Amino acid sequence: MSRVATLPMLSRFSCRSAWQVLAVVFLVNSLAIGWFIQFALGEPTSTPALAWAFLRLEEAGTDSWEPMLMAIEYLRQHEGVQLYRKLFFEDKVKFQYPLTSLLPLDVFQQITGHPREQLYPLFNAVSWVSVLLIGVASWLIFSLHSQPDGSSSLPKDRWANAWHLVLILAITLTFYPVSKAWMLGQIQTWITLLVALTLLAWMFGKPVVAGVLLGICCAIKPQWAVIFLWGLLRREWRFVGSGLATFAALAVPAVLLYGLQNFFDYLSVLSYIGQRGEAFFQNQSINGLMNRLLFNGSNFKWSAHEFPPFNLVVYVATLGSSIVLLGTTLLLRRKEKANVLDLAFIVLGVSMASPIAWEHHYAILLPIYALMLKVVLDERGGDVRWLLALGFSFFLVSQNLGFLNYFRDSVLNVFQSYRLFGAFIALYLLYRLNAKRHQASA
Image 1 (spheres, rainbow, N blue to C red):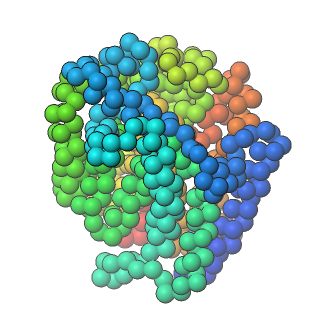
Image 2: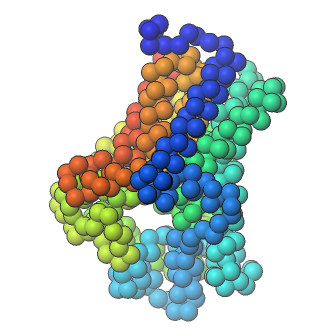
Image 3: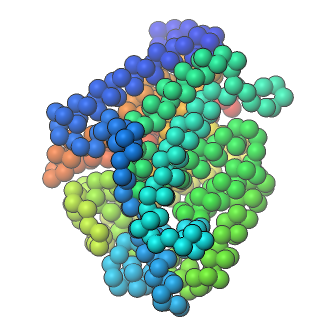
């Protein structure tokens, strides 16, 4: 280990103290950059602006709630209707949620009897609390120490714990994908919390709980079922069993309530989206990058009713990159005992492999960054190279660099995918950290 490029092998207390300094400096810089972007470049949704809106309890949007509740009402009013054929293909409404995701909202509305207009603020209030819980979960991921008996506990210094919690909550509010998901009124906020709790459950040695939480995620994003294939390859039977049972517990009543044909129709929706994706700059996937690079579809203007036209080059690039990402995250180290870094690796890989990965989908990286920072400080001794790489990735993902949209009409629009590049750095760091961990334990 190079002495020039590496901090001394510090004690746990010294490493944590060094992290506090780094975190404060980075938080201040993030706010400063955010304010510069907001006032000098005219970006209204900078990280400080969104954090201030959150603290002021401003009204959030209905990006997820409106189409989901509209679909529920439509299913009630038109018994036996083929929902996706009507809404998605005929009416050109971009309703892309599986029916399993509607079931909890439907049951809640039936119990309360509230019209959907009254449910919007209620669901957003749950999301507001979820943002705080994401911060708390990320703090726990960073702070918990493993004990010889396999349990985990917090350090005994209460003031240090409180300081870390306040700092991580501040970072959570200035993490753009998290605050943007809340402001939009996105169910992604709930998914991010579930992911953070899943990582925690795995750290506590509770694979059954982790499976249940991921099973709920799969009810909202069925493509995440690939994670259970990851579990099968690593013989994590309890994780897979509890996850599939949870998904089945939501899928079976949804089939009975909404009809089997609608479930098959949803596959045609996924196929249609997979062949086209989105060119809009907020789609931070390989598909979005390729659509923009080939000027295939609207780059800067969101269309609520149109997808970019089918392009063979885009389709092949999307399919190929998805196969590579999924194959890599599924097969690497499949014969070794899975740990929390492995789980974070597959969760991020599955998210990035999707044809449409909106910028708020990368909110799941916040608890993953907390995990990686913990490992860098505890197992890599605060290596400067790791900290710089982690900090650069965090910066690309956490900030809204909207001024890069000025390049949208040239081949330099590749820079619009800055968040995707930050996610690739994070994916690589996860792999390398895990490789180092396995080497150390060999």
